Amino acid sequence: MADRSPFEEIHTSTIIETANNLFDFKSITYHTGIGYRAAIAGDVKLPGFLKYAFLKCLKNFDKLAVKLKLLKGDHALVVASPKK
Image 1 (cartoon, one colour):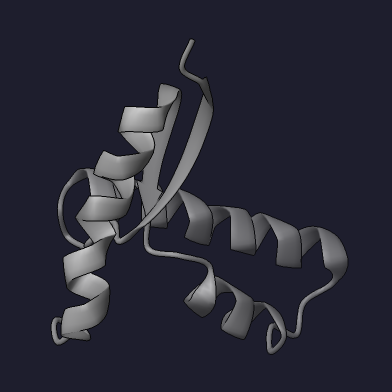
Image 2 (cartoon, rainbow, N blue to C red):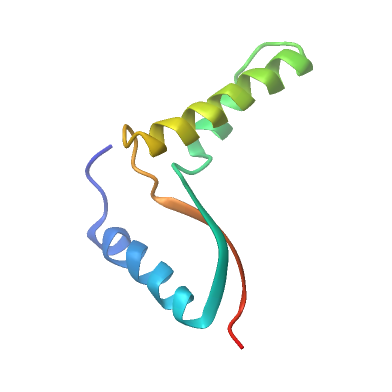
């Protein structure tokens, strides 16, 4: 999904930049969002413990794929506190 909305693409980086002006970032983790995992989770026909293990593997794949730049990390989880 290389084609993205220009509106979203323009604002993706500016949101982080603006937030960084207002907050001290403790950590920031990029990921592809939960869309595909959430879509798959509803359709996985496995017992609970296997289902959650499978979804955890998908989450780990997501993290690795973003780190290796195989997938674009276009969502961010930021832990921050207000600047003093």
